[in-house]
Amino acid sequence: MHWIIYHIIKLILILTLPFIVLVRGSVYIHQNYDPGARLSIIAGVAITAVLLFIYIVVLHSKVSGKVSGSKSIKSKAVVSLLLVVGFAIHSLYFISGTNFKNPELKTEIRTLNPILRLAVGTLVMVDREAVITDANRVPEDYRKMGLKTNKSSLHYKQEDGYAYAIDLRVRGKNELRNKLTQWYFDWMGFNTLRHGGTADHLHVSLPCHYRKGSI
Image 1 (tube, helix red, strand yellow):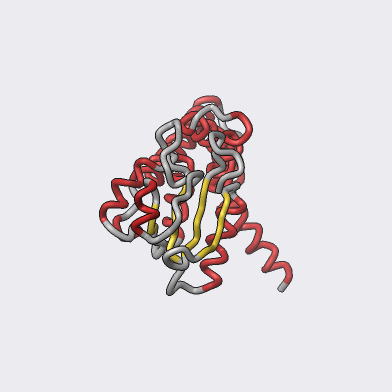
Image 2 (image 1 turned 90 degrees about the horizontal axis):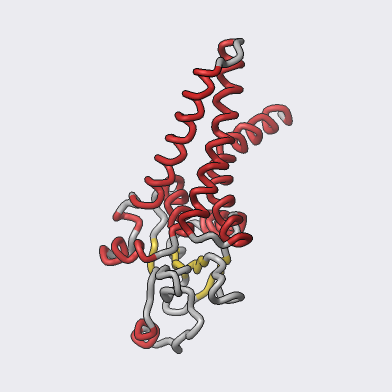
């Protein structure tokens, strides 16, 4: 029984590791080197493509019993890169309309920092019922909600033109699923806060160099 559990956990880790490396790697580069959102994601894509390339080479070797030649190595490297780039583009730009509270948010999401968009896009591929309830805000939005204006809010566009925070619906969802969602963002290096405000929701933000300490 323990042998079966071990191999199931091992298989899950192997399958999910490229996605973890892509998102966590992008966040790590952003936090430690701050080259900008796009370059951080490009670095995350490059690291993940190398990992996927290793997967493909090892799998091919085990299945065929042969060591890949130089031409085969090059084609595997290209395939690995194209797969990761394709996944990143899909996560960034093709989040379904059903994952937004209202149609306006689908346009608003483009103002969200791409690293956070990448993480959210990856999440909704696993949790199709995830719903984004808020993204970019202006000070007037807080007053409309009957809340005190938050001058350090990461929902505001920062100097680079991106908002750094997003809210996700938790109401009406299984608490285990809500916890797993929060843990996912925590593990990936984001800040999370479960709070009420106008309604119970999960606040997720990317650490921002313009407003250090803000969440």
